[in-house]
Length: 551
Image (cartoon, rainbow, N blue to C red; front, side, top):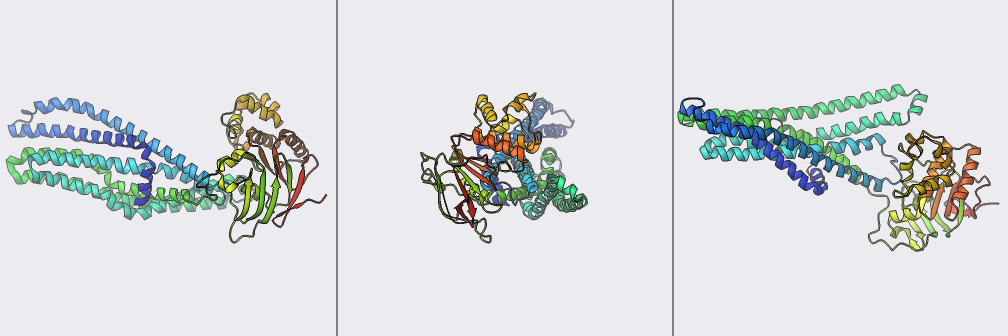
């Protein structure tokens, strides 16, 4: 747990000054609180020694007004600055985690549970606020109180300072002492939350299949079971926190009793100091009351951090080159002796594949499902790495080129190209964020969908709906084609671009495709040709090798 927490803090280095400003504001707010009651206690103590309650408290009362005004301002600034620092740190963490996932899951979520992964991206990162807001800030503020109380009371009586400050110092040790014991409970809570999210999201993602199979009852039972597991784990963690809270309350009460005991033992001579010590202990009780619960909060944050780093540290499927080669001048593709399997215990997809795609070629690559057509696209885009052989782009080994450079030269329209629940313009700009609107319309026209978009009341601002639900299958495919065409990549991989379309729509789409991709190198990956594709070369994948297709 400690290593994970330290790693989280290392991720927040860029926000150091915000974090320090939040800690400083928390210390000022805490010190203002004890100053307020300390002045009141001093006035009462001075009045008692003078024989009348407020006879000698005039000076203290003068200071009470500005301190009373300072305290709410300090509390407001503390909340403002600490939360601003936390939100910035969590935003940085979320961007870092998303970037790590993008590097490690380039082909999509795959075998990872979507709901659980979403939970790690959202809830587990949000839980990290307990590291700062729930542990570091209150701990440092409480430490400043212990030091201030020890200095103030030590000037009057070292014995009184020890009686009041020592129990408070022990309360400071509770979070690190209780956190390791709560770590296992925190881990179970974090894992149970991930399982519950997966149980909820998975059947909703495939709602049609769930309903068609009458599987609602099974899905509900699974959700109920995961909820019960989460509730049990949360109860265990809550009990840990409750024990910590009780221990903290006992120690703060001990500080008050210490001040009272000192007053009783010292008689009249020690009354003033004892009253001051009692007021300071009461003022500190507010800051120390919830501090011991920070142990459970820290354990929960540590468990979330562990889940976060577990996903983020998954080895990347394709390592970036340590010393990237210079960008190649050309974009011809040559594959020689390629060997690849998705896993050591799975059969080889390619075993000695040789393929040459010169610049400007229009290659049709045929074969049934599972023969390796889409795998070849993944290898060319550096979404996977070959176990043997070479892939060259413009005469340079693909392994020596950065992935972003490769994908700036090779674009892909996949068979399940996704439109996101955003505007048409935002979906297009995924391929070219800085493109002028004229370029967007040109790509839409080339894809044969420009007239439809112009007829929509909101035009480019029209939302596509989840997975492009606003449009028909053919329209959605044309929008995805426009996005691919917007890329300046000279090589286009078209992986089953007309999959799922009816024959008439498929024919019209492929005719558009041939016209729109003129002047680029095209690798068309299909099950079959229908006669409108006009390739310059046709190959068929057989047994992990490329063979000329029979006439």
